[in-house]
Image 1: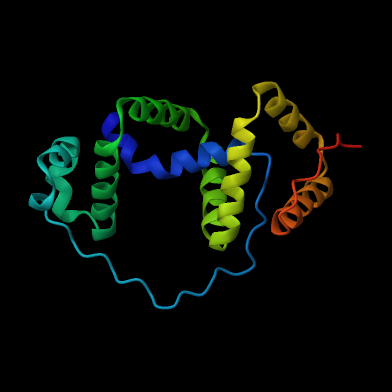
Image 2: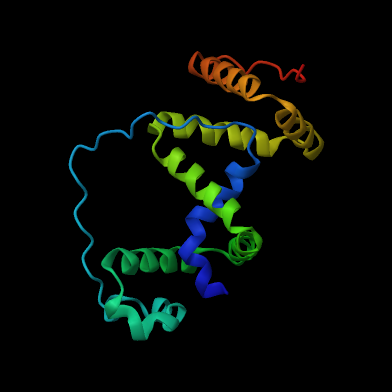
Length: 183
């Protein structure tokens, strides 16, 4: 189970956070245009991995050369990240991975879509969302639960208005407007 974790580590961290956040990001109309297309990943030789990475990825050793280069790069990056984590970070990651595996496939797909929406936002909007989420995480659990309940009771129009108000106040450096219960 540990070896499988690093494949989804980045997605899980973001998905778990955004699934609980009271701020939703509207889908981008068009993805931002890239200055130049990213170069295609090059194959990575098994021998270029550190002994620790090879041990972590040993279940892929037999198929390594037949994996697409982007999959090899992804596995290598994930293993590097896993190896750089503290024991506490690894325990948290294992817990999130267990939660991910327990989710129904449709919920996982929804989180993947939300992650793609987030990734298509401009960097400054991503930063605003991270800051909002961090403020939310720092609230007392009772307040977070209260905000989640309010969010669930809102109509789509009320949610849209709330996110627009928060976005505008963040752009002008003002504190976010007080949360009002839905009508």
